[in-house]
Length: 367
Ligand code: ADE
Image 1 (tube, rainbow, N blue to C red):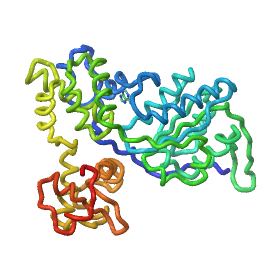
Image 2: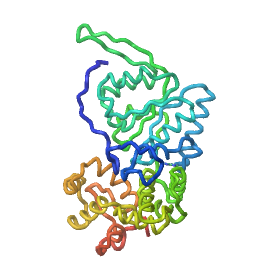
Image 3: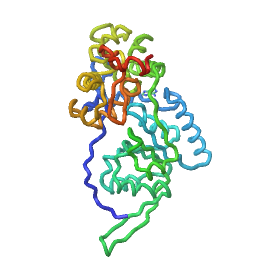
Image 4: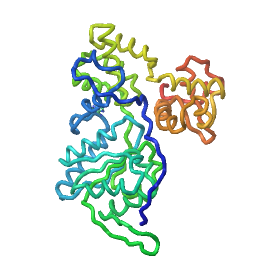
């Protein structure tokens, strides 16, 4: 294959609540922690073993068996693809797998692999058995994909040097490694790339019991006092997503320190989350604006995502990858061939009168 620079300019994928990361203060005192969620905290809280990891039961079982089998056969683990909405633990699981296999993990994302030499450089420095984690793998460019294929399948890369008549190809071996790909959009992955993963698994949204356990576990690690009802309240408003639960704990904890006695109770969690405009279903201002727009301007839909993106001043990808999955999951929004439509649950939740046509037939998740 010809090695040439790809000048695609790709942005990093959006994540709900992404902010400029700051280093944590040296003190462990939460009073001193800034309002912005800090990646370092996310890492502190992150489970390191399957035993610590709550939820995704069937995936965990599949992975444990695959890891055990690869150890017994003394071969690297099959390549794995994780897909699903952001914040459900794809990176966390990749780190746990590396830990459980006792190998190093190299973490990168597709937008960082723009030039052929980026991916070649990483592949050539991988040691036997190591894990390469590529986030947002659906954004890998064609050239990088083609370099990956033989590396994934037969553990070599073809390096091409020179131009036209003088072109030379060199076959270079790479160590046997495991690729873990993560994506919010499995459908956007090319067929040949998807077919090269031995295990393809969707991460599911978490139920409220699992989230409550996650909240309690994280609070304990962060030394934050929280009671059962406080944990339940945060769990219910976390959009079925651990990353959001962990952010809300910190916000509620800050609030508890300033406005209360430091303990997160149901009442305090309520006050803190209302203060952040997070409603009882976990929706924020943008979620509500999106639903209200469809209700008020488009009679409940259908309306195209492009129109919604323009009206909300968000890009289409952010709407599709960050906002819609939970609205769809919670039965407030539907995707139809003609566009997005709200359900009667959305009318109910936002306090609108339910239109006659929706009041019969349609069955929502909360019925
Ligand atoms: N923190 C974030 N995700 C988690 C999970 N699945 N289990 C425990 N703690 C977590």
